[in-house]
Length: 231
Image 1 (cartoon, rainbow, N blue to C red):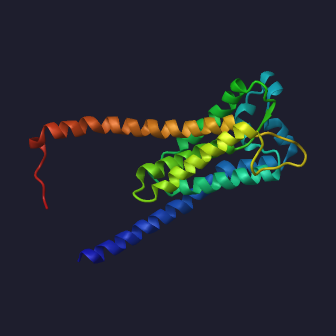
Image 2: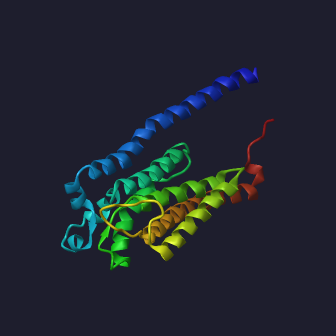
């Protein structure tokens, strides 16, 4: 009798997970692909939304937040969106990963932080900061919760850290190119994005552990209060 009950339940869970993935994927398109492609199609909008230090200091504060959806070239756009959509799709498969808050934080904080910490930066754009946040969230959560192949996620985090280190030394993009403008990578954006992902996930995990520990301690001190167990 047990086997006939498990199969429909497993099939229903698989269908539910498939439906969840299908229904959530358009949100990724709307949140990242939509604005980035729309901005890239209009040079006028690009010039209004890109980070420009002079314009920001003249009061155009919105550029601190919209600049991450702007890109210098089709190559820059392609590589940023490829990583962003791929990692976001993997994150959507995992219900337990709370990644939207860290990504929202990176979209809100990276621009202002760079404005303060990079005083020589005149122009800035690109989604690589939030993409780094998502990558750290995915790897850290998989490493903490996976029972096998933890080395894959640890290696990915190590490679990401190595990439940021190289960018601080070289200051040139590893993949993206642009024909009409020569631009430098801003590794501080990736460092800030990764730190946001790390501290948001680590903070949430420690908060969850601290909330559950008093109950666990109480149960361990008062075993007689636990109800009868059934086999």
